[in-house]
Length: 89
Image (cartoon, rainbow, N blue to C red; front, side, top):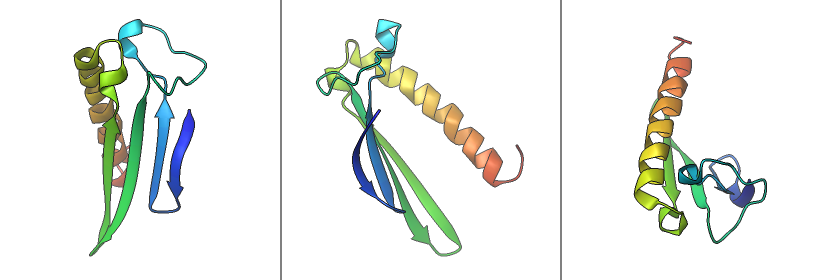
């Protein structure tokens, strides 16, 4: 994982070699064949909004497969975060 941008405590963006269609994870991050995750926190009345954006799928071996695989992963991970924040974990 390589940190691309950092603006504590509001934002972090990192690059990760996570081409799921290949079936293996590379130990080295290849800037030409990886995606970038951006997590942004924004203060709202009575809370905080988290925005998660992942880009770079066109550079992966199978963009449609990887996008769907990562979408499913983010759905699961963010559901766990919501459960934790609501005290259900």
